[in-house]
Image (tube, rainbow, N blue to C red; front, side, top):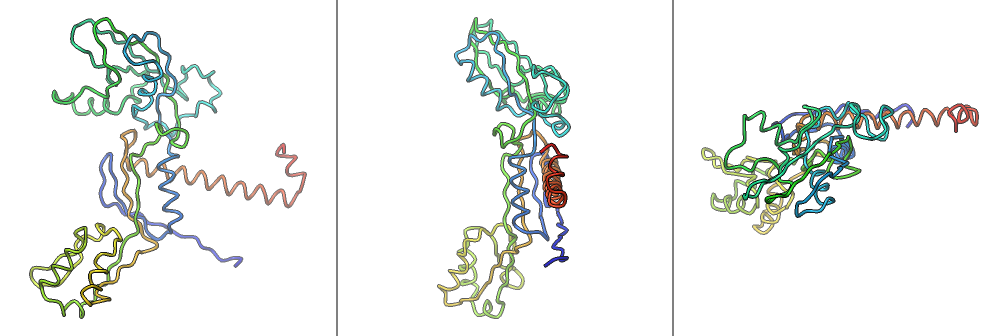
Amino acid sequence: MEGVSYQRFPKVKIREMKDDYLKFDLRETDASMANALRRVMLAEVPTIAIDLVEIEVNSSVLNDEFIAHRLGLIPLTSDRAMGMRFSRDCDACDGDGQCEYCSVEFHLKVRCDSDQTLDVTSHDLKSSDPSVVPVDVAQYAESGGYDASEQRGILIVKLRRGQELRLRAIARKGIGKDHAKWSPAATVTFMYEPEFHINEDLMETLTLEEKRDWIESSPTRVFDIDPNTHQVVVVDPEAYTYDDEVIKKAEAMGKPGLVEIYAKEDSFIFTVESTGTIKASQMVINAIEVLKQKLDAVRLSEETEEADDQFGELGAHIRGG
C-alpha cells in the first residue's frame, strides 16, 4: 500500500564480549536482515592479507607456490583495512606494492647455519607498517613474549643446514568473497531466540521422578528442578537446539501439551568468532557499515532509474550511458 512505512529500528544487546568472541542479541528485525549481517561479516568485511610473493632464494623442501600459499593464510592485524584502498581502485601506484594507500610490504630473510632444524615462522616476517603484522606477533608484543612451551609463531617452513629462504611479500586489502584468506570470521552463527510455555497444571500431575526423566530427555541442559519448590524451570534457553525431544517425551508419557516452544521470529542470538585480524566487536561494526554502503548504492540506483523514467534518453546520456 502506498504511503505505508515498514521501517524498523533493530536493537542490539551484548551478552558476552572478548577480543576474539562476541555473543549478542539482535531484536526487532527479521531473518532477512539477520542473515544479511551474517553473510556480510563472513564475506564482505575487508581485511589485509598477503597477495603477492616474490621469491628471491628458496632452497627449502617446499616449492615456491606452496610457501606463497602458506604466507597468504597467515592472519594479519587489519584495524586500518576499512580506510585503505583496494589495489584495483588505487590511482597512486602501479601495483608494485610500494604504496601507503593500498598495500603493505613484508620481507623475510632466514638461513640455517646449524645442525638443528630451524623453524621459519610468521615472527620472521618484517613489516613496513608496524600496525599491520601477523596476529600472533601482535599478541606476542602485548603479552611480553612467547611461552617457552609454545611454538614461536605460525610455522611457514623448516630449514636444515645450508638451506635459505629469502622473499618479498605484498599484503593488500580484500574481502572473503574473493578469497577465504581475507575473511575476518572464524565462524558467525545465529539462532532464533526460543520462548518456552510450560503447562504448570499438567506438570503438577507428574511425580518428581517423572519430572527428572522428562528433563533428562533433552540432549542439552535447558530445564532443571527448583530445589525449593520442586517445579520445573528453564535454566538455559540458549542451549535449546530445536530438537523437539522434550515434546516427544511428553507425548510418550501421555502428557501432550506439557510444554510449548516457539521461535521468536524477530529476535536472534548471534555468536561471532574472529580469526584475530580485527576484534569481534569491530567486525560487527564494520559489517553494519558495509551493509549501509550497499543499501545506499541500492537507493542511488533507484533514484537513477526514476530519473531515467522522468527524462528518458536525456538522463542516460547525461550519465554517459
